[in-house]
Image (cartoon, rainbow, N blue to C red):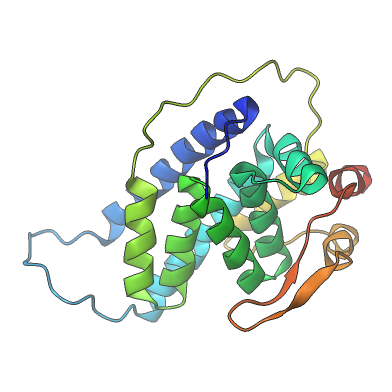
Length: 222
């Protein structure tokens, strides 16, 4: 898929990629062996490693949803329905915190195919959470790949609305820091759960579709 050349999209991708790299460094440093070992077939991920990956994935999604450009990126994606990797990334993270994990994987793949390294990193964590180490390694490599061109600066974002209310965004962070699985209030979950579903995909199951007005409905729920 071709990469998005939207100026504001480049800004959110740069910011979220920076967050993802910070998460990656912390994650890899905790599991890196002290002595160098020859390359071998990846050992099955134990429950602790899978839980850790799930926890890191939750954090990545909270950071994406809380980003200043999240609402604008999702609005472009939902309203225009073009190839917008950054908007697809935000939508996937929103689905993840609502519990549509397989559909989130679908939209992360869409975003990663468009060049989003943050989406690729989310897929790395998703597959590691599921004990799928070969796929996890593939997406980890994609997340580490630098783009050919540096991100361009964004236009002014003063007065840009947030995707969720301050209370909802702060609650997601509090839940994560408390060791809980982040989730949205029932009213916000209902907004997502009422989205049109595109069939029943053999690999990903039911896949909610973004629609015009989604950001507006999310932002007005308190």
